[in-house]
Length: 219
Image 1 (cartoon, rainbow, N blue to C red):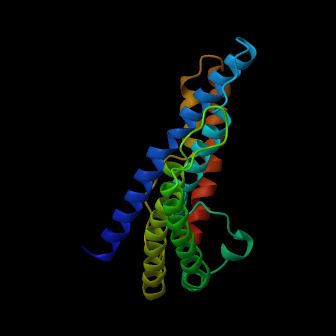
Image 2: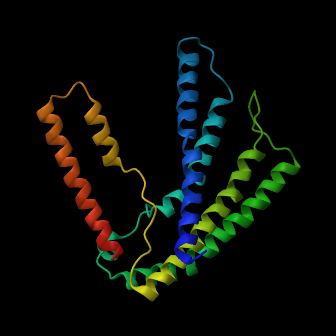
């Protein structure tokens, strides 16, 4: 397996993990809606809902981090970074990954594993009328650390390749917000044809501008 194939494999793995755990947002919505109905319509609030919400949201947030990193979606100072040449971008990224990312994620993974083992040893539960086990949720901390670390190592390799070749290795493309907007407009029955075409054209213009900006960042 060559380096580009290795990077694509790691990107696919991070994307796969992110998309699986992204479904937690659906579960979270259903649980919240059920609790609102029980609380206000039936006057029968559930004691464990608040803890379950926190655990689901925390899992969603942590396990989608590698996916965001694979898509280059984390926040950065674009006003400086975007004007740099690819080799300069890669050199800066490489230094930051080595100085901050590796020690930080390594510490998170190590501490998270210790945190999980301590919770498992005491069979830790939440403190409410209907206690929930906490150790499965705390296992998500080292798991997220391992997945993000794997993607981070791939990003370090990507930086090294860019420094050597002067070009960024392409990332796996995924659906963008503009794609969803266009799909919704095309299937809408509440917007007349002229307005639909106008909005889709504007969405295409915005999407193309974003793609060109991304291409400048990667070339």
